[in-house]
Length: 319
Image (cartoon, rainbow, N blue to C red; front, top):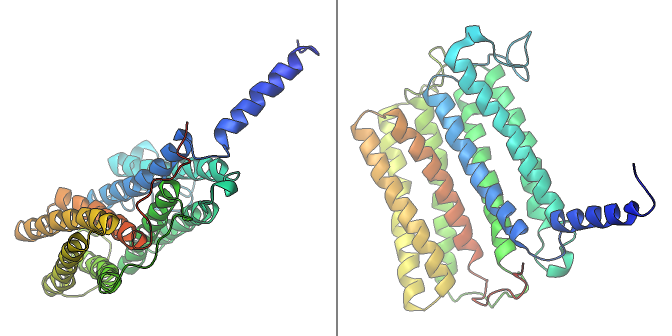
């Protein structure tokens, strides 16, 4: 039974919960959600890759329902239906994280981080990505739509990285532009990272992993595309190495730190790419290659963002 005396306590509890969910400063909750946003966006690429690499792309043959009669998978659909439906259910996790993330930043204007825009962009892209996924199914895994689905994931990862950056770096603490040639090298690195990913999408679309035994491929020469894919990849490796060396010599700490992280991811990606090509594109290596592409996008985004950020730590990292 609710009494007059209990109402103030209930109001205090509600206010306390709201303050935790929507703090006015950058808290552990804010930072945890930032990482959850980025990690979940990379993770769903991994699970989406598992759907494709296990031949479960049409495990649920319709969209938004799993079958014309059922919203969920049915036993007759077997393991492929379970895998595909499970991946679809992860979309709701992304929606929950996106909603909580947006709530966590709506009162942070005074921090000067500008968190609302990147949080909104990530949140908007989640349903857009779900619709693209639906179109992918309805078109019978058209390789170009599948590729668009992956590229959209890369864009969300970039937005999520931007959001994490804003949480941990005060945009009011921006320094003067880094002296040439570092900005040019970083810009070229970002361009070649994008080109490498897009050519990689076309290469995968010509290969054996269609996501379903009856799905079409894009008809391009897979062996030739593997060679073409390596050209921007090696150029990206060389450019990133140049950024690391120049940033180190000029003691541009943040650029050096994030370009070094990018260099490490690219080096692993190159090794995985060479091994998978030599051993006939085994599923596990193709899946790792997809996840590493997301990490390349994230590290490249962070490297670009580091160009104008000072090395001072924000004073508002509290609680």
